Length: 326
Length: 155
Image 1 (cartoon, chains in turn yellow, red):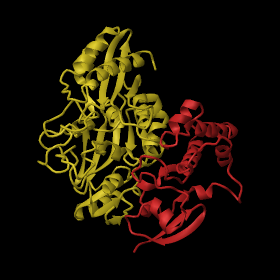
Image 2 (cartoon, helix red, strand yellow):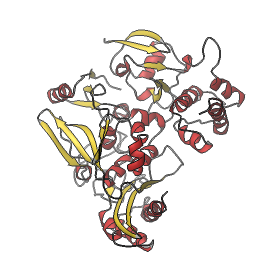
Image 3 (cartoon, one colour):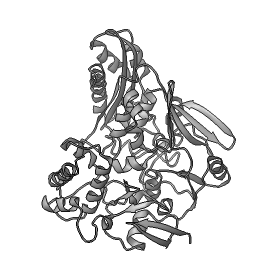
Image 4 (spheres, rainbow over the protein chains, first blue to last red):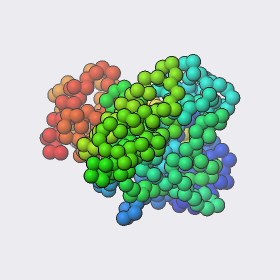
């Protein structure tokens, strides 16, 4: 790992001032992604601003929403009683990600910002448009079994790796952002940017900005929800396909639906068309139709074409699990 | 060079460290505590697991400078006054290792599991130990050892 300076402010205003004043600086919290990518040689900030001493590590609960400080560790969100009770898909998504050690380190703010696991992105010797615009992409001809089928472009089809972000997108989560010049809020769904011709730009976070919290409204279809993750081994593996699903029933009739997909999109993928197709229906027959709609625009390639059918079946199964209260 | 105070296994240390030194390298190379192993060094194998304030973390992805004032426990701090911890004894009884390289990470990780208190069934123990790889494939005996300690501790 190359040399860098480490700054350790204790209040948020000071941290924002430091990041604005310092050339080539980056924030570090859990470090699970930042340190890893620095060791790979993918990123090389000359200064790290350690934000773990900032007071952003609490969870606030009220009747309208739950507000999770950016520094709350993944494991603490997963085990929070209100998250388990009111947003089960989020607890399950956090528990489906990484390992207990990593979940004890990784923070919520970092989780939504984590970089892709594309092996060509992680290898500075490979061509990658995400690392260096215009270099090309070795994944198209190379190994791309894990790659995305939704939201892809000719420049990049790397998968967004987060489990939790998939549930957060389904739950209409809001990102609370601060900088030295003010604060703003944006929905997590809008926060993510499709790769298009500029895959280096992954989200709406500007230099000098810091995510301070994620807020989740108590919406319909949040309580009866689950997270289904399909992967190559039973645990400690990234998703081939994952589904965050929630349903609200009025008798037999679906009143509200939430579906988001992981492992298949270049960003955590909200399937709004599929949600709309479910509302007003009753019985399982609508599930398959919704799954067809969710994958309608999928672009399969040589090694990842299996994900189209796998995603459809995972959607149907996740919806059945929610209906059966699993 | 910045000075860092580290508290490891109840003992205070003062070391000069560059900010890019990981907690793993600080333990092994600066403090001579080589029980914690460097496997992949990229947060994928679990061999470097230590406890920070009682919680299991990967020392290879932790910067030492970010752990001033923390209580760090390594495998060297698990036995007390020369007596093995019951979990260590369980690993021996169940032959829960072959080459032994992953073992200190397995044991410290299992201590974290016991502190968390969420794993009871075999399935839950397997899931909660999934961050520790064993290339020898001693998993079934590791499971038996951890299960015995979960039962003994009444978790």
